[in-house]
Amino acid sequence: TSGVRARWGIDFNPREAAYVEEAIALYTKAAYPSRRTFGVIYDTRLRGDTLAQQTAALLLRHGFKVHLFDEATATGPGVQWALSQVGDDLAGVINITPSHNPLPWYGIRYSIPAGAPAPTSVTDRIGQILNDLKVQHAVVEEASLDEAAIRARLDSAASAGLLRRVSPEDYRPVYAQYVQDILTAVFGPEILNQMREFYRTHGYANDDLYGS
Image (cartoon, rainbow, N blue to C red; front, side, top):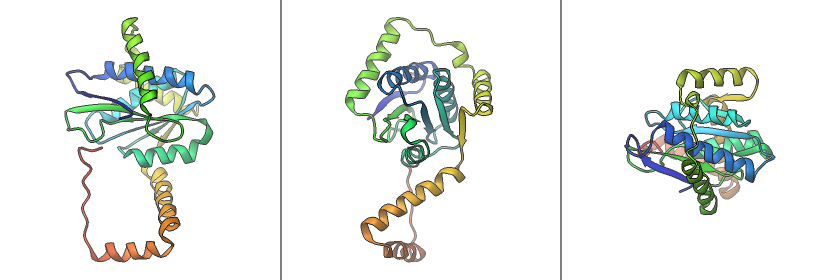
């Protein structure tokens, strides 16, 4: 499932999340040393935004640049934005989400530089690094958990050009064009008018399934 899933307040909290973030950063620095930019996104669950900010601050401390989304979004648009805007410098995308799991669950997903969900070989290695950090009693810096310190680091990084805050106005047109290009390539340009006519006369519903 390309990452970690756990229950909030039972086996997951900001400190545990920081260990996972640290392991992903260490893995990526070793596996893709020339790639220095991350995308960070989150879903609609409570605390998603603060955990995303925590993730961004930790990545900045490791010397990465960060594209941080400023509202909840799905994995697809976030990854597509990062691929299209960052290109060969993309180290990956971290998504604060447990995907389809019920609301008490939280999680962190890692997408590799190609945009695909991290395969088992990658998550196994990240898990090994995480376990090593725990065995070595690696200390999570208190500053990495303090919300005021996190905000200060993000503001400083934004001023220095190391952090880009990504708004819906930034990524939605990019993703819409990406989907449109796929549809027209597969079905021909007439598919767009057919879809417009269909949705003009039919209602539809969207279920985000726990905000994933």
